[in-house]
Amino acid sequence: MKGKSLVSTRKGNPTPVLVVWLIVMFLIFFVPVSYGATAKEIEASVDAALKLFNQVKGGKELLQKAKGVLVLPGVFKAGFIFGGEYGEGALRIGGKTVDYYSIAAGSFGLQIGGQTKNVIICFMEEEALKKFRASAGWKAGADGSVAAIQTGAGASIDTTQIKDTIVSVIFGQKGLMANATIEGAKLTRIVR
Image (cartoon, rainbow, N blue to C red; front, top):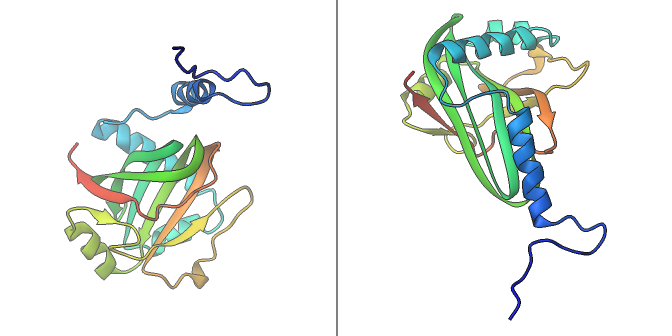
C-alpha cells in the first residue's frame, strides 16, 4: 500500500509543503523582533515605534490627549488555517514606562501568510486606563470596546472626531495578511 505524498504533482497547485516552507522563510527573514526581549530592548523598540507614529499627521496630538499609551511594536501574526499573533511592549503614562505588556491572539479559519504591525492603544479617559491596569488579562472587545484606526501612506488622524474611551492605531504593516485588528487579542502584564 502506497502512502500519500504531501507534494502535489499538478501544475499550478501550491503544495502544503511549499506553503509551510514559504511561511518558515517569512519568519526567518522578515520578523525583526525577538520575543522575550529585555526591558532595554522593549524600550528601544517602543521609542522607534513612537518616532515613526509621530510622523503620522495627528499622531502627536493623539498621544498628548491620551491618559496612557500602550505601545506594542513589531507585533507578529502568521497563519495557515490556524493562526496566532504575539508581541511585547510598554505602557507609558506621562511619557514614562509604568508596566510591560504582551499581546497574544489565536485564530482559526481561511488565512495564510504573515505580517508585522505596530499597535498603539490610547486610553483617552482615566477610568478606562485604571480598569485596564487592574485586570489580570484584558481582552480587546470583551473587557473594553476599542475603536480601531488604520493608517497608511499619507493618512492622518483627526483627534477632534475621536469620542471613544480606548482607541487603537495600527501602522507600519509589513507582510501578506489582510486582517489588521486587535479584536479578541489578550493583553497581559509581563515582568521584565
